Length: 517
Image (cartoon, rainbow, N blue to C red; front, side):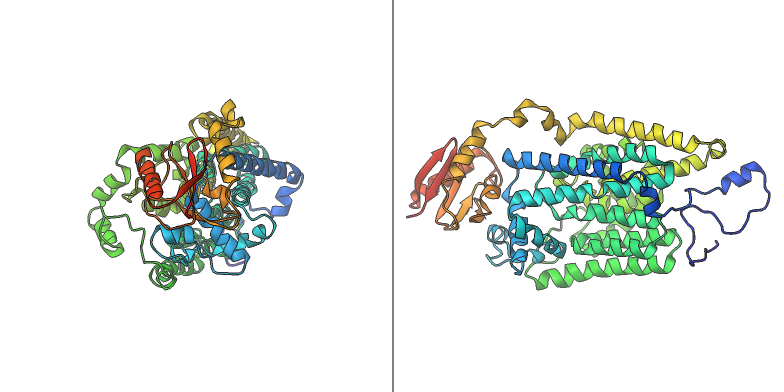
């Protein structure tokens, strides 16, 4: 293993700095670079900055339009959009991120700090956004921009490997990835920051800037506490690429940070360590779960793939990329994410819905391209045929884009193709009429779907089965919605409010606005 003049192993292209002696063609082909020599980012963008910028802006616009349509159609909710709205609003006023909507619903107190739930100090970076536009749609647009900001990083990664034309095709396929569609369809979440950081870390490794890659990976520790194991595995990936000391330090640091945040910081901030533990199939705590995995690997493998919904999710993750990520060491980074989700007893983690798959999108896209480059290297004839690598890249990129387009009707963006998405429904009109009657500045227990439309000018609490004594209540007695299991529970809650002295001051559709005298 040789080192270059900067003391780093050229792990990505495998090209030694010394001249190779004459060898048979087959032997030389086996030692040809996996990747072309890394090029400076500025050089890659020459003649392409405008088009890559347009692709990125178009992606951000598509994401933002879809997210705002979700909000308009009452598909955002107090859990989680109002939670993050209250946190960012507090940061914007230089306060701790107190989230009464969560604290009161979960009996943690009205002064509960979000950092005691999940350690996500990165949310403070959104405070300046709220100095300009302090409302849930601002969070949705910010999420759209953060997701889209990973597109040029993917383009650069592919450009170095396969050329400009494949880079556009793969970047467009990546922009339409179903994992982003599902995430955009389910409120705002802090993992919006993780997507560009992961893409940046992988691009910096490819550019042979390991220190910058390590910084990007370490920044994930501010996104959410469970990125600690991910950062640890990223350290292993750096070590595989040749930067052993840096990789080892990052790996140890990621695990240490995970321990610190879960065992010390979160409890100190009012939460409970491993409050979301859902791994009873493995054991009652982390040490027993790890011991179970070591003792019963076949049982763990069965747990990772059953019930069948897990297999379906795995197919949707890898099949659109022709399982090429499995040929790249980058796929190692998907392991901690998949292990965390698929061994849980929480069914929300298993499916293609919700936001949990978004962080895997840059890993799989970049891993697929890296895997394709390694596959090309296994065919010596392609190494000596001018333009062969680019041609293969164009064919593969076209296939990836075709699959992404074909998958749109299966996922959230399909709503954009329907006429109903662009019309105002009776439920939307009723919601607009009823929320307009809520006075500014009041505390209100609100239907989860209407909380995001009131949080800008009121103090929103989640309407649940327990009376919180708020002076105003907004309830829907005609539709099932979180946290009620059925319409009957909502109607029983409405009856209890009337019995408790509340009076109906307005009605629109199934919505009822009540006030306590």
